[in-house]
Amino acid sequence: MPSNETTPMQAEEINQALQIHEAEFSIFELQGFLAAIVCLPKFVEPNKWMSHLNLGQCKFNDKLEKQNLEKQIIAYQELLNIEISTNRYIPSFFLDEENADANIELTMFASDWAKGFLRGLEVEIDLVKRLFNPTLIPMIFPILMLYVDISDESLKALLPAEAKVDELQEMQLMSMMVLPKIVTKLHQQLHHHNGVTLSETIH
Image (cartoon, rainbow, N blue to C red; front, side, top):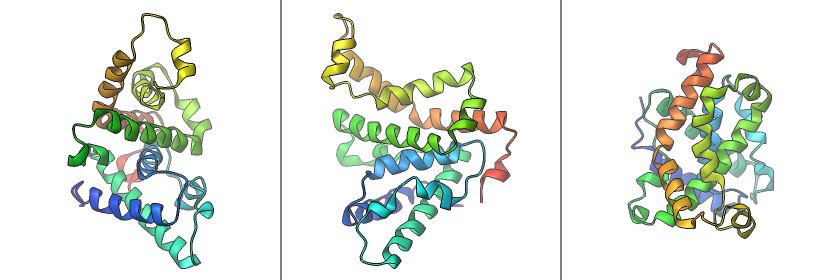
């Protein structure tokens, strides 16, 4: 069984491919998207969720390049499936030693991840809405907190005068640190409520 020690290597290979082909999303957004696909309470065929990535907008020299990137992404999703299902998931930005102390940069990466996660839930949003219940709110809130751009001036205008940006940044950092556990719990809750077993989710 693969371990998450292989994840950074795969992520870096895909990241390079996304940059070369000028994808409209970052590797962190892709990771969030794929994590959401794993958490969805039903198995979704790769050809369905892959269409939501709009790889057709990338710049490929031929069909083979596009097919190779799709194969890389599918293999990566399968690895994340195992990691999340077995409580071993760690988003790759936690494993980047060069950025370990760069909190602001990390929250930017985490924001991309959150954007991708919410985008992934949209693949089966009607089913997610039907299964949504109060127990899931504490799990979704940290992801929404990461999604918010606290540097946005329009957001600052909506906040109370006593609200401090550094306090919001601290909340984002706290949300980021609980992210691995949140993803695992969200996966367990959604699959439990939909009657899906572990064996049904790993393909």
